[in-house]
Amino acid sequence: MSKRKKKRKKSVDVKNTKRKKSYKKQIIGLVIGFLLVTAIVVVAIVFSRNPNADLIDKTWVSYKAYNSSNKEVELSAVYNNRYTNYQGRLLFNNDGTFEIWLTVGDANDGTHKGTYTYNGEVINVQYSSGEEAEFQVSKDESGKILYIVAPYTNDYDTYSVYFN
Image (cartoon, rainbow, N blue to C red; front, side, top):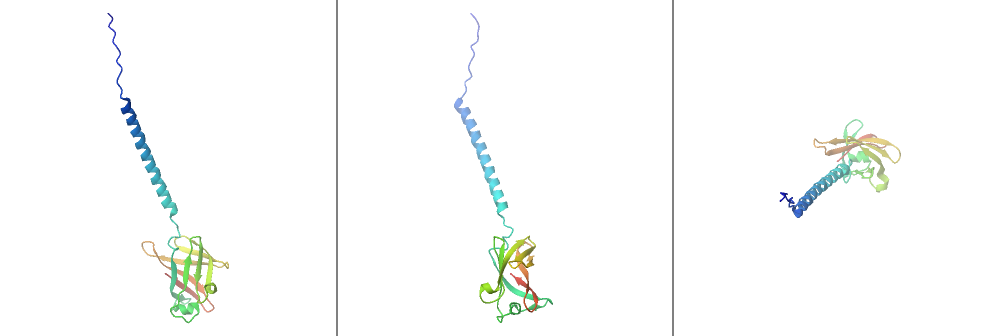
């Protein structure tokens, strides 16, 4: 008699192997999906930060002014009116346009419009008339804008008008 050994077939649990591979694929897919979503959120936050966010969505109101001699003057002198509590306004739009209203009456009479750029330190404006100006920005320690100083000239003097 020959002594041949019968080769034994290894018993392989096919179901168990498939499950392990399936779980690994699912876990890898979930990790990759999570990383992609996280990356998209981070990119969206970084690119959605509008550099003009501190300026827009707020009406800046004048509260004091200084003349060319650096003496504080009543806003009524700046705006050439008799209203002691009169305040002008300054608006910045998200599309890079602005308007500044300085005199009483119809908004079209005293409103000056134009475009602006803001670099975090100063606001460079160009009025629709072509005149250019630089508005100074003052911030607190946390970076929040405290006030904006806009130059303004009327028939009598040149002023620095403060808006907050």
